[in-house]
Every structure is written in structure tokens, then in C-alpha cells.
Image 1 (spheres, rainbow, N blue to C red):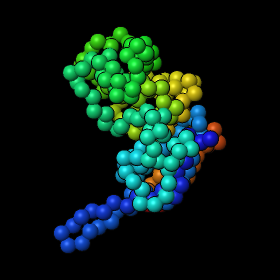
Image 2 (image 1 turned 180 degrees about the vertical axis):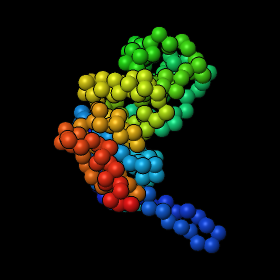
Image 3 (image 1 turned 90 degrees about the vertical axis):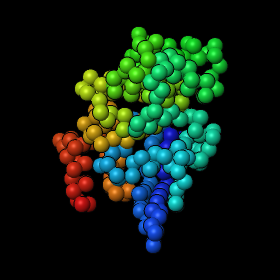
Length: 244
């Protein structure tokens, strides 16, 4: 079974004007799948339709046409959503809560019992390398630390699929390495990780495959092990330039 299947997905936004409404095609007949247990990158310049696709997968947007499936279930589906952990591009975290408190909040919302949640919080903070900072308020955390808290809340309920929207944005070299290590450790646990990014080098280091999207269209699926002697950046730039 595939973790994600996207079939002929199209999303059109209607921009309301005083005289005539204007249509904007954000995603254009998009189709691809993500196998269970793989790390899959979703790459494209800003404004290519990556976040729109992700929000449609999560049931936050309805498609204009086409279908999305999560672990065999058609979206939107509450059952499918319970199997997903999601990190938005800009996670909103309450800065006056500690790392432990924010995870307790999200764990409770996810329906985890208090007895299980106590141990699970420690496990998750260990995974994201924040166990020693569990009683520190989030307002004192760096950008990289906040991203790790964002990942922690996404995995607190032990989902099968992680959907991460631009997890590498704004991180320094140490933050980038920490995020790579976390994603690779999740794969070792058997999780599927699907993430969007415009940082090509990070995708090349950890993905088995990537999809390149531009102006809402799928340009190419790339298998990382087959790209040598080129780099993923070479392929990405070539594909984008050929459509510009």
C-alpha cells in the first residue's frame, strides 16, 4: 500500500474582484504516489503549489478536481488524519508554555491517556534532542529548537505518516543537521516522511525520491540513486529553466 496517492489533483482559486472574478490555477492535474517507509521530497520554487497540495492532503482545502488518498483512505477522512503528523511551515507554538507543557497539550488533544502521555513526552523529547530543555519556555528557544518542538508535536501520537512543510527553512548548519538526523531516525522507526522544500541539497542527502513541481505542474520524479554524475540541483535547475 502507498502512504500517499495523488490522482489528477487540480486546485483553482477564485480571486474576487469588483468587476470580474479572476481564477488562479495553483495545482494542475498533479499525480504521483509515495511508498510506505520512504522519505519523499516535494520540491519547487516558492509559489509552485507545494503548500496547496499539502493542505489538500490534510483535508484543509477541497480539490477542484482529482482525489487524494492517505494509506488507502480517500481524503477528507478523520481516520486518515489520525495517522498523520503535520508540521506547518510556520508552526504556532505558545511561547509561554514549556516544551513539556506544549506536548502535554497536543497529546491530550490527540486523545492520549495521561499515564501513557507522561512517558511518551520523554520519548519524543529524546528523539528531537530536547529532553534537557523540557522545562524551558518556548519563548527562550532558537528557531532550530522551535522546529524540533514542531516535529515533536507532530509525532507525539505515533503517526504512520509525517507531512512536513518546509522543515529546513531558516535553520543554521547545526539546525539543518539536527533536522536531517531526526527525519532519518523516523525512517528507521518505519515512518513515512513526506516533506516540501526549496532547499535542494537537504533533499538530496536524505530522500529516496523527489517530485519537482513548477507552476502547479509535476515536471519530474527523480530517484536520487540514479542521478550521478549530475546533482539534484543540476536536474532541478534544468527542469525549471526548460519550462520558464
